Length: 230
Image (tube, rainbow, N blue to C red):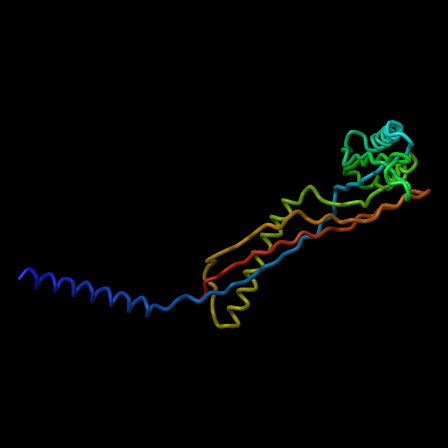
């Protein structure tokens, strides 16, 4: 008797399970639309960086070092006078290397010292003055100028928000064309891009004031959004 009841009870459970599976199979799945939204914000840079290199050559290493130190100090003094307390200066590289003649690889004929100073400033209107006065102070090479902005994080967030709005606009247009209606966002994926690539221009020292004009830089973000539609 007990065995018959147990078998009947198990049969009921199996039937209910099969009924649940059938209902799950028959339940329609919601349609989805996946869209990638992009947005780009243009901004004027407010930070500029320039590399100034002082090179000296002498028959003895100490002479080359001493001469380089004097010229580098003159360069630093000149840059500070132009930029004041606002300018940021740091040593980006220093090297002392022997100089050989082509046919004498074991005995150096002299030594070369290279000292690179990196300048960072928000006084972008003074870039031409920095270049010209550094040239007068005895700089050997002037590297390319890089432009960037200190508002990058804020601007990237704004671009990401615009990208979401753009994705929603595209999804609504697609849903309308397909005879559907957007219900809600199921999934949103956003991976911030790396630092904006600095805008570079070559710096050329000249007798007259060197004109430097910074152009706009673009910050672009994208998001992937999955919408539920019916």
